[in-house]
Length: 410
Image (cartoon, rainbow, N blue to C red; front, side, top):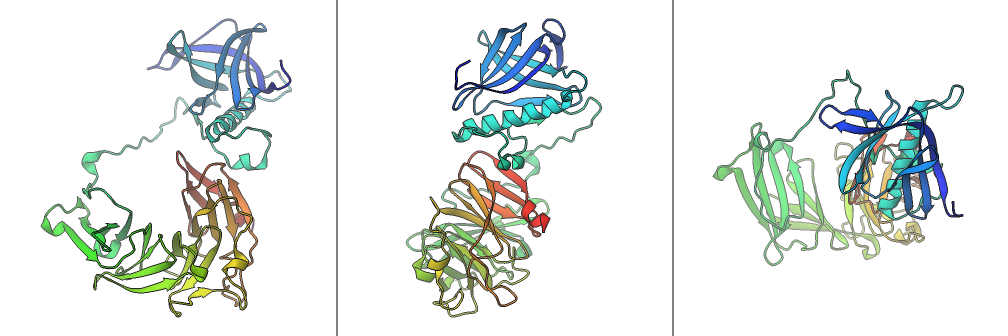
């Protein structure tokens, strides 16, 4: 073994080959407990699953970003596929643990955890330096799946097109808003010249209404073309457009016009906007906006040219995260005002509120934050549950669901 090689996992056990994929029946290859399974790091970003029989190498399989593992705690086994002579074959390895040592089930848990870390490392092109790193505790079965027990009745869910409403919208869509009170699905896209085109698709309990009354198209003049999203007000008669500029555009849907613009401090581009207390239920006039390296609050009851809320004598520049290598990409809030922000490096930070903005008690939120997760790949979208205890983050190729332990401890 070279100096760069490192054994991450090793266990005795029995190797099986999949004989019948339909019944999932396996046949042992060789005698019981005469094999070893090894997870080895040959070099940075070079990981192998190796099987030894009587100290001789029987199989060596390089792991890839799309490698996948199934495991059974009931049978103390791990299951995978490998390419053998141009044919995909299924294999299983049943762990063996001598008495008084780590149990076979615990070995399966350790192996699948390391397997998840390794495949995630290959996927994000970031080497696993320390397998005991604290942030791995948030990682669930990203590249593995537990097999159901033989007697378990597992629910199966499927999307069937014939039982789901579908409405054709055409190309060029930017964002969507659901006007629940009016049973309308609003689809927004740039219109001709400086117009905003809004398709209002009517729906009922049976799906989308397909007759002539089912679709209404609104053309709003002088709307910003580079908008990236919209926020619908509680009455569902007004929209706030954001993105593509340093202001929020207030669109009156009944008048089909932009009636006001709320300016960001220091002409900062507004990337995303949400309600400061999770939804419009608590305070529909207080909004939390996100720019490339800071978050700030806007109160739409104030002067539209000076509606950002900051401590006296302070500005957005004082609360910006100047050390950020990259940009913020998304944010979400809880009903207590907690603010989670994701960035294009994969970090998700938790603030007690928008830095520098006023607290309900009249004081101001600090600039300090705690890192919740470091996913090592850009975070595209973020959401918190109303109580802030759970977080969902969307990345390019996976969805991350995490328990917000920082709020739970409090």
